[in-house]
Structure formats: C-alpha cells, structure tokens
Image (cartoon, rainbow, N blue to C red; front, side):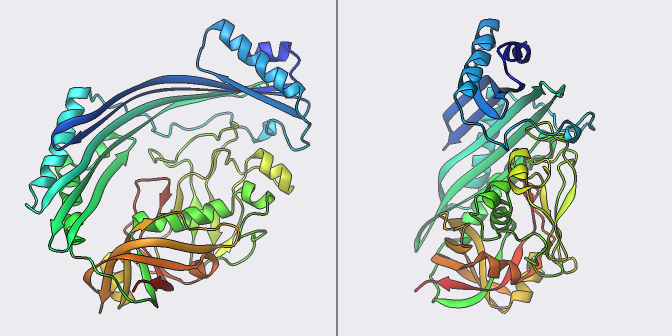
Length: 430
C-alpha cells in the first residue's frame, strides 16, 4: 500500500524497509536484578525518488493513515532536494529473486525468571572460583528476534527472521597491587550453541585473576600478538578503509588500492554472507541486492571494495551487495595449524594484547595508536601481566608485517579471525 501511495504522489521509484524486534535483556549484579528490559518495537522507513532527487521518512505507527502520511512526507522532501546523478534504486538485475534458508531464526524460550536465574548462575560460578574475586560489574542474559522485510517499486519483495542471543559476565578481582576486571561472553543465533553458564562465569573470574599485579614495560619495538577478540579490530579497520564511502570521499589510507599487495603474500581474507547460522549472514543486502561469497584479499592483494549501489556509481563500479556493510569477513589461518601456544613460541619475547582502549585509528592516514593491556611474553611463555601501555604504528606497515594468523578462530562476531602476530610495533610504557 505504501509503495502504491508514494507512486500516486508522483514518485518515480520507491523503496520501503520494515523491521520488527522482540527482545529481553537482564542484568544481575551481586545476585540482585539491576536491569530488566523488554523490547517490542517496529519501524518502517521509506525512500522516495523523483528522478534523482531523494527524500526519506520513517514511522513506528503502522496504521493506514500514518503510512500514507509517511509516504507523502518522503515525497515532499524529495521534491525539494537537489538531484544527485548517482542516486536511485539498484539495478534490478542485481537484486535477489530467490535465496536459501540460512538458518538464522532460532527462538529461545527464555522468560524473565529463567533469564534472571541464568544470570545469577553465571555470576555465582565466577565468585566461587577464588575469594579474591570480590566484586562484579554484572552478569547479563539477552535474547532478541527480528523480522526484516524490504520491498520496492521494481518488484523486489523479500524478508527473513533472525535471532541473536547472548550471555556475559564481568568480574573484579583484588590483589596486593590493586584491583583488575575482565569479562567473558558468548553470543549465537542458536541458544543451543551458547557456552555453559558456569563456563562464562569461571572464565571471567580466571581472566580477572590473571591480570592481578600488572606492571608496565619499557618503551621499545617488539613483536605483538593480538588475541582473536582484539585481532578483529585490525581487520575491521581494513574493512572500513575499503568501504565505498571511504573510497569516494578519499578518506582512506587504502585509497585506490585495488590490485595492490596490502598484506603478506600468503594472506587470504574472504567475505561469505551465506554461511548458515553465522552472525553476519543475510540473503540480500539493505537494497535487496543478492549477497555472495567472494575474496577481499587473495595472495595478499586487494581484490575489490565493499560497495552499495550509490558508492559503486560514484566510483564507476558495480555494487558488491554490501548495503549495510561487509558480512562474515573471515581470515584464513596461516601458516599451518598453529594455536595461541605455538604463536607465543614463535614470538619468543614480546607483547600479548588482550584488551585495547580508545579509538586511536586514523583511517585517512593509517596512523594507529591505542591503549592496551595484556601479558609480557619471554621465551615463548607468559611472564607477567602488563597495563597502562600504548601500541602504535601505521596500519599499512602493520598489515605487511603480519607474520601469522592462528587457528583459534573466534566466531562470536561478523569478523572471524584467529590470533594475529605482528612482527614489530612500537610499545610505549615507562
């Protein structure tokens, strides 16, 4: 109805996106319920084109009158905007017409009382590990189910349901040198794939205990090993640098880098939006364009950018089905099948990074400087925890100096990578 009404108002092309969410989130701290939130919302967003002039409006009211008013508002706006030669719906030939079931919808029957009990169990397991674990920042349980539907005046109509569930815990331990905190979590589309509650609480406690009596280290150049949770931020910066927006705005340190060797020759990074059950999977992008598996990096060389229709037109290229961003970016482990212990041995002496602080990444220049904490490693073994340090370099150099990627791949996000060993970075401390 809303598409037809917008066309009746004079729009030459229209796109409407509908989302509905239902969720529950619980946080328990020291056994007491701190927050209990229910989510039930809906939204419809509409984009109307008058030629290449664009207007958009949204509403949370799905009554017929409100939908008509939303369509009329988008059309009014479009009539007053300047034409943009790159604006418009995607090429119909690029849009998905059928797609597989990606197994994204796994509802969790977890009412509030059960979620509260589960959060208490997580936190209690952490406190039971050691009496030095004396405080908590909370244990949380969350579940969310979303319906996404997209339609446009070219005839595309498609929708799917998806779920996302999570459990987490952050605990505080006290030692002779003061207090330290750390956390653990699990997230999955399928609740059956979440880690055991006790395991999450125990890991949070053990991680906090390992950080007690942390020291500083002297300023130096040394190898740096990022655990998977931290390694994904390096790959995330790469994905942002090759996004269409960064490219056409000329705000990327990897400007016009397609065809160039960006990583070592053995490095391989792929995108696969069609992985069943994965957190980044989707059968089509935010414009209805079909998603597909492809290489981003092959033999160290940048193969392509991350483009929606608008950025592709700005660059004289074709959309890659990435309206809404990259999905399931995966780094292939190499060399061999090395886990964290083997990478520590390969590093010898250097820094193992388990936490980073701040956003010190300049995507225009590639300059990288972030606060960090973790462990100092000597002769391939963890020697002691470290804190209040800064790691720095330039991302172009950091990427070229990657010596290995571990097989300890973390699947709890849209970027899937193992630990990453960088040959040398500046570590600033005392």
